[in-house]
Length: 108
Image (cartoon, rainbow, N blue to C red):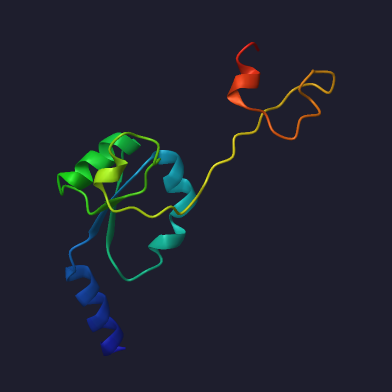
C-alpha cells in the first residue's frame, strides 16, 4: 500500500504534458487516454492555433487537422484519416457513382 501511495505522489509531482486538441477530437481520444499515470493538461484549440502554440513551445503536442499550410514545420504522424460522404437521393444523376470528384460537383 505504501508503494502505491509513493507512486501516486510521484505522479502528482511530474510536469504534465500539455496537449492542444480540437473539441470534437477530445471526445474521441479522451478520456480513454487519461487512464494513465502520466499527468496531462488538455487545451481545446483549433488546429492552426494549437500547431502555432507547439511551435512556440507553449504546448508539448497537438492533435490537429493536417490540412493547413505550416504542417511541414512540425514533426507529425497521421493517426486518423477522414472520408467525406456524399449523400443524394436514389434518383440523382450521381446516385450510382462509386466515387465523386470535386469536378463532378462543381455544377451541383
